[in-house]
Length: 90
Image 1 (cartoon, rainbow, N blue to C red):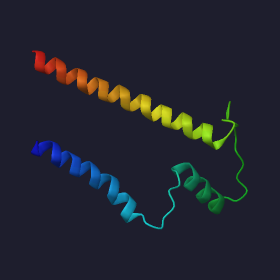
Image 2 (cartoon, rainbow, N blue to C red):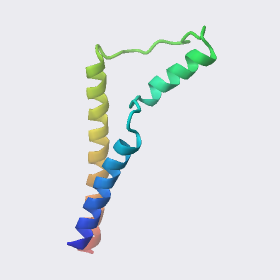
Image 3 (spheres, rainbow, N blue to C red):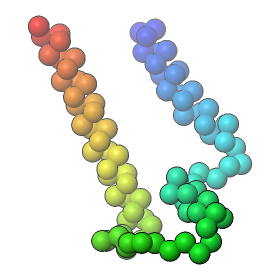
Image 4 (cartoon, one colour):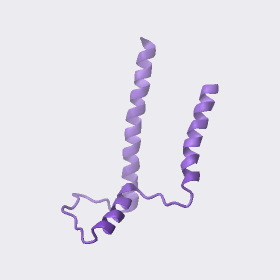
């Protein structure tokens, strides 16, 4: 019980700390920050290729990113649970 409470406190602090630490900062992605730096360093830079497909809107792009994260975390935690179950069985 104490172990679960400590994990819950750790998770809550991991959620709260960035929100309190980054107060007043924008939560931009790395792509947006990289584009700003490229515009500053080389203002006449032009892409040397175009993406094969671009999502029709920012919401769809966010949805696909969240779906990718959900599938990845599902795979990781399934594997962790499977490994723990196999270890307990043997």
